[in-house]
Amino acid sequence: MTEYVYTRRNLFEAPEYYHYAQCNQAGYLEAWRNSRRDFVGALVQARYEAAGPAAREAEPLEARLAGLTAEVGQAGRVSADAADVVHRLVHKYEVSRRLYQRYAGDWRRLEGVPAAGLQTYLWFAQLLILHCRHIPRDRQKLSTLLKVCDALASLDPATYSAAQSRALEAILAAESELVDQLAREFQ
Image (cartoon, rainbow, N blue to C red):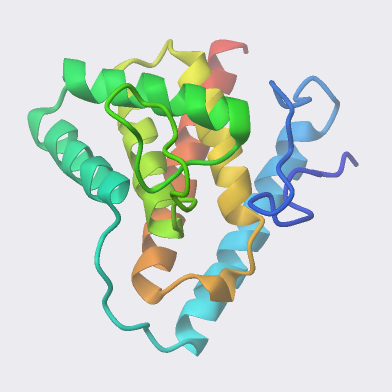
C-alpha cells in the first residue's frame, strides 16, 4: 500500500515544496483518505480532552479572510475582491508555504511581520473551499487547498482549540468532497 507522506512532519516548520501531489501512484487516494480519517479521529479525541484557550484579537489578514468567507457564503458567488485575494494568497502560499499576518497594499510582505496563526490558515482553507465550489474547474486552487490541509493535518491535533478543531473537521470533510468530485470526473 502507498504511504501518504505529506503529513509525517510539521509542514509549518519544515514545508514540503511539491507542486502537485504524486496522486498517480497506485493506492495514493486510499492512503490520503486513511491519513485524513486518522487525523480527524485524533482531532476529535483531542478536542474532548482539551480546555478552550482565552479569546484573542484577530490578525489583520485573519479578519479580512473571515469577512470574505462570510461575504462569499452569503452571496453564493465569488466577488472580484474575494477572487483577487484568493489568487494573491495562493501565489504567496505556493511560493513560500507561509502566510503572514499583514501585507503591504501591493501584497508585498512587510518586514518584521510575523507568520499568520492557525486561525488565518483555517479561514484561508474555508475561502478556498468556497472558491472551488463556485469555480470547480480551478484546479490550482484545489491543489493549494490540499497543501494547506496537509499543513494543518501535520500538526498535533491537541494544537487546536475546540472551535478550530470543529472548523478543521468541516474543512477536511469539504476537501474530501472536492477530491471525490474530481475523482468522478476521471472515472
